[in-house]
Image (cartoon, rainbow, N blue to C red; front, side, top):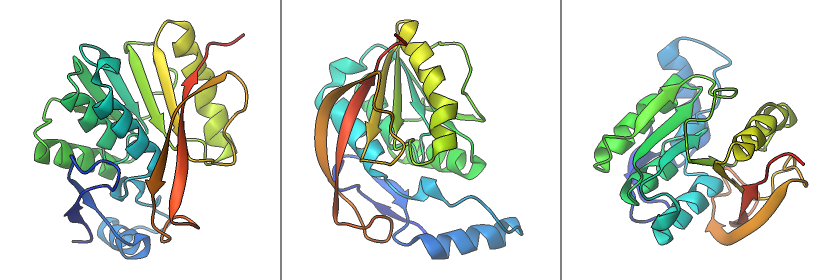
Length: 208
């Protein structure tokens, strides 16, 4: 087993199955799946964007209380679990990686958030059925950003609140975003090139 129960630095209220090193769990995943070229196990780490979103929701529960929430590219489900604790009417956590979905279920159950529903697959392009969409740390590659931003802006145009938490990734767009709260998030040099990241939670604005 390459994970252990741990509490993210910015969100100690939630306990997750996390890894401390990426290489051992990555190799173990390839061995278990008997495959090479497996996607990195992003779900095994509490990324700064998801920590910022979870902190925002727990500190200001009115943002999601009684509302339908999507945690997009949810990783291990940290923000989704926080939304459940904050009183969201429903919470979906979307992930492409089936192992991430398994981690979401495991973490949700451990935190008494069994009603969090994992969604396996590419939800981009789906019609809006949510009041709030949370996206943390999703602008790390240009193709990913081009894929998701038009959809997120379309959801905003349809009346949803769309929050994008970013720690200064290279492909964050500079237009149609309104800055919100900022957080200093402790990070590990196993994943980052520094000890902290400043994360801004941006409100995604509709096109035009």
